[in-house]
Length: 472
Image 1 (cartoon, helix red, strand yellow):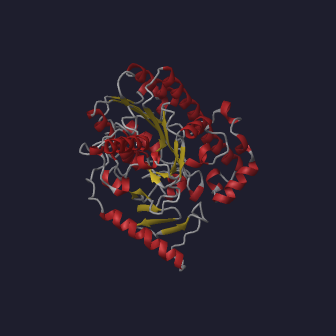
Image 2 (image 1 turned 135 degrees about the vertical axis):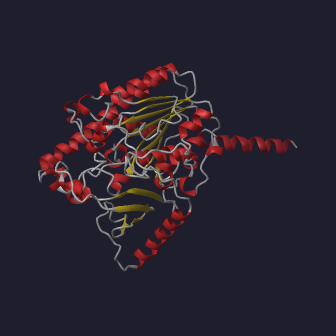
Image 3 (image 1 turned 45 degrees about the vertical axis):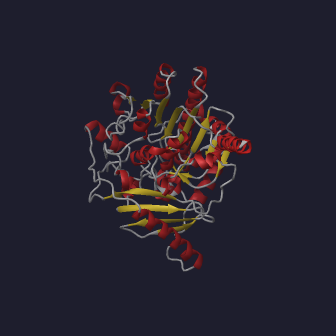
């Protein structure tokens, strides 16, 4: 009997090491709009854009191959908050509303005793899309904060409001979502930051990027200087965000926030920056738009840092947070959105998990017969129809219902430049069929979401959505 009890104690102890119980109380979810992974230092960038985020990654858990469920802001955020794909939650584009019937992460946490608050940097999307459900307090920019139809609130002001709320509610367990918009167009070149960005001020470096990634200089008026200023502006916005994020951690530590806390940093999507004849996002499902940062920083420093190379999706954030909080009854029972907790606490390196794959969707586009004269030529390259991409460690298949499909070998074509869909090589046929079968299973695995028509609230929001490229 004693041996049995001793064995049971040992088993419980081992389980507690692998999966720490009751470890997380406060959760800080930070989503940085339009932050592509390869412009973040810990994802291989050398332009000194993110020294603070890099420090979080060194102390936390970094997922090196994280991808978005969508290349558009609201669909991607809806997937983060519901654990559902766009085809399921029906937020297929900005301006679509999330139906009340879909239970959000904030609603579940509030029902389990968490104070919930959101601080977002735009007033044209989230409340209009019903993303405020489940939040006790939802703060978006007021009209006086957005002068001359400015499309977003600077990160420093959004963060300032969030840390004031956190300080007032630090004695209660809480969930806080902070959304920062600065790396989204229109960019501002922060001149005080420009000289800290390293070799990306070098023309020869940019020429190498243009050659490797086939950047279309036509979009930048065939001017290397224009391209340089564009990249510098984008990177300076990222560095500005990085500086402001440093203040969040500093303040939280000053407030003696409970060590049983988690900061989760990610993005909704990336940005084309001239690749594939495109400047923004939303249009394509290439990885410059889909590859995003995903970092879990635990305030309890006893949790060892780790770099994970298994393919994952931001749609898995929903189940992962609930799993970490032991709210398993509310998790989605879906193979495609399983929790990342086992990867976070596993001692094994799952860098070559053969069965891992991710899926991303793009909204259906109906191309207008006539474009406004104010729309730049590159934005007239929208593709009609819908697209869905599935990729594993080495290959990627993009299905399109109106145009030709695409297939890429990622091992020797990281920038997705050579479409192999017509290739007759055996390796192509074998791996293409594998992804097609996975995609077929995915499409058959869930019922269609409710058909919800897009809802635009007022003329100011229409103007803002047009300025962001979401309405043609």
